[in-house]
Length: 86
Image (cartoon, rainbow, N blue to C red; front, side, top):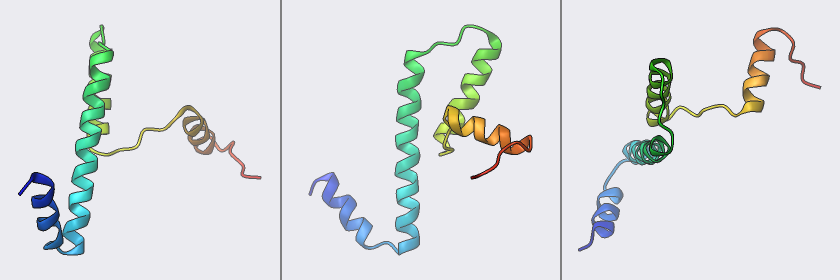
């Protein structure tokens, strides 16, 4: 029996709650892979950049969704009281 069959067999025996935990774990593993791949492309040079990059890598691995530029601008506007939805 191959790994996929073993995984599927084990999956079918789990409760829905445990199946959800498995899905979340798989997503976390995917983020770790993505963070590692990105990490090999960028090498921080300063102590501050190294610290910030480590924080970013840990955040991604934990499953936190990073904001894009538009989302950051929206959040800043909301916090400063300038955001209005039309």
